[in-house]
Structure formats: structure tokens, C-alpha cells
Image (cartoon, rainbow, N blue to C red):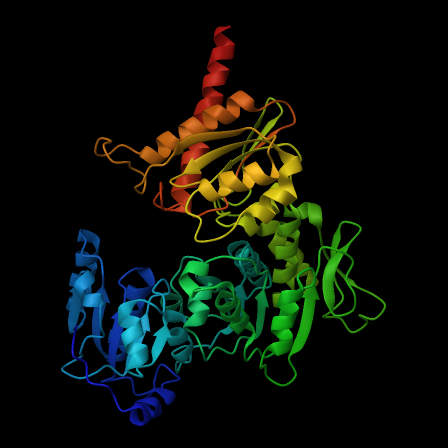
Length: 525
């Protein structure tokens, strides 16, 4: 392990406290960046542009990371250390302990380098914390932040929020955990009026200074307990989204836990609590009345009237309850920012949902095929299952330490059959045995390892696709008129696929192949 001198906390804290704008004295700051993925690379690049002295560390010595390392060295990185041996302790920067460690969100507090930094009193920031500190820059507009977290629905809500802001004529963009590193957005030369910022529990854990205009925790359920060390720590990280909010804390009326988060938050004076519900809204809430989404929070006559926002049907052909909730949460955020009801409606009409979340793949011969690969935990899968009545459920994968009993018990009556995928589906299979003993359970490609390729398969073959081909073939055999084949795994994908998108794409391609094969067979007959 590297023998790193411990910095003097008082002197260090004093310097960091003054770093709250782009034009602050960043030059000469000693920084270690943990991780060289998208957010880590962006953080290192930003710090180098600010004039900081930067050392970058990543545990994976791969061709891709070596290429990124070469780029960072060209733009001034003092050192880029690749390989697991460099992640055991905080490295020196020009022979001295760093002033700060900026970590990629996926690095947990238990990771040895970060644990070493915490033990030595070295502050740890995430990329979002760094972005907040450099958001103010002379000669550019400073964007207000609308922050969104939750166990599920974040990306949809961020996309809807962005669409509503754009419909209102604002210069706005979705950023953060949604895919675009937030520091890349912050460095846009034109700047923005608003940022719709998706925040994971990891990013919130490493953030302590944010002051959003409006904020929301969409929902909270067991997830990422392995990273946080337990559910309570996970929930505490999610609750940080409300801290220092200026105008409105948006909470889920149907989930008391989110309201408690708002009640316990330390917010700025004048900040309001505003609820959203898929039922009839009370005063200071947004909700649904006779298939219309309405606002009883951001109008003067809210005690006895409501502003119409949009019809539920305008959200699309398949509108599960949680999609309505996401739209109402987005509407509450932008209404807090002064966006008109007309722009909310136009934003909903213009919104195009991304792939892999309640994505209709096909509707053939009375069978609806739905790709919900983004349902990576039981809470998300429950929202999907609740939208359909007779389901052939494709499920399984990397469980992340969660339990499945409540999920299966609540939706057993909807299940016509279950097709399991994943490396280890023991917990899910046992939950099905306990709570849905009469539902047929078929295993398809379980028990293998590797992200998309199993041991012994030829180089270049896609084992994940093979698994999904088998699963979809079984589903096609079982499905009949009125059934929905729903791929909502309730688990992460990394045991058999490279990502949830890889898993979803494999499902879509397998469905199309099966349906084309059925069509060809029918023509031959």
C-alpha cells in the first residue's frame, strides 16, 4: 500500500470551501480521480482544464482504459494508474497527499482506496458534487437544477421533464445518471436555463452541496443494498435529494416514506411540499381526475379548482400506472420552475420514451410482447406486472441482494408461466415455489457465467443472445390469445449480458426472429 501523508484537515477544508465557482482558485489543487469510465474521465478532464494537479486511478487495465489514459496524459494528467494494485490506497500527487478524491459513482465507500481516504480525513466528492461547485462561470448563464431520484422511473421522469422545459422554450437538457456526464453539460459553451438531473443513490451519497430549485424522490424500495451495506443507508442516500431545495420538494402521495423524507429535509426558507398521486389530488397536489392529469398545487385558486395539464391517453398506447406517476412528478418539477400547463401538455405529446422500459416489441396473434429490461429490481418488475392480467414472465439475473417474496406473492394471480434466465435464480425460484406453486416455471440458460459469453463458447459468440433465444422460444410456445410476454427481469443483467440494454436488445431481436419464423411457416402452409 502507498504510504500517503495525511493532510492537515483545517487547511484543506478552508481551501475546498472556497471552490464554489468555475473561476475560483482551482489551480494547483491536488486531486485523485477514482475511475476512468464516462464520469471519471469527465471529472479528470474538467479538473485538468481548471488547472488542478490530477492523478487518475482505475482497477481495470484494458485497451479501452489505456487509450483514455493516453488522452488524459496528453492534456496534462500527472499520472494514470491502471490495475487493481493501484486501488488499495490513496496515491500521492506530486509527493503529497491529495486535497480531495473525486470518485466515480460506482465506487462504494467500502472500496479500499476510498476507505483509506476516509480514514485519513481526505474529502471525497462525486462528479455531481464537482459539477455543482463549477456550475457558476463568468459570462455564461447559471442553470437551475431540477433533481430526480427514486428506485424506479428516474430516466422516464428526467426525459419528460426535459421535454416539458423545451416545450416552454427553455434551453434545457437531461444530465447525470441518464447518460450524459453532468460535467460535460456544465462545460457547454452556451450554458443552459435548466438541467433535469437524474441522480442515483451512489451519486447522492457522494454529494453534499447541491441546492436544487425543485427535487423529487419518485419512490423507494429495496435496491443496491450490497453497495450501501443495507436498506437504511440506501434510503438515507435517496433522501439527500431534498436537502437545501429552494422552491418545491415533490413527494409520492402513495408512498409515505417519500413524504417523511421531505418532512425531515433541511430545505431553504419558503420551500413547499407538493405531492403527486395517480388518484384524486388534494390541495397542493397533482393527480388524476376523470382521465385527466391536473394541478392543484401551482395555481392561486387551488382550494376549489384545478388546472388541466393533459389527458392520460396522451402518454401513449400502453400507459401503466407508474408512467402516469412519472408524468405527474415531471409536471410538478417544471410547474415549480414556472412552466405553463400548455407547455406541460406539449412536452408530454413530444416525449418519445427510450428503449427497454415498457417497450412494445410486437402485438401479433393476440399476444403482446413487452421489453422492460430496465426493470432491474423487484419494485420495477412489480410496476410492470401490475399493468397486465395474463403474463408469461421472463425473469431472473443478478439479484443485488434483494428478496422476491413480496413481488411474487402480490402478482402470482397474473402469472400464466415463468421463464427463468440468469446465472443464479435460486432465490426467485424458491419465492415462486412458496407463493405461486401452481405456476409452471421453466429454466432457460441458467447457471452460466460471463457477460454475454459462457465458458467454452467460441470467441465472438453471444451467449446472452442464445439464452434469450431459448427463453423467447419457450414463451412463444406457451403464449395464447390475450397473453402478454413480459421480459421484466427484477434483476441486474451483468451475469449474462453486458448491460440491461444488451439484454433488452437480445429480447427484441429474439422476438422478431420468432415472429418472422412463425409468419414464414404460416405462408408455407
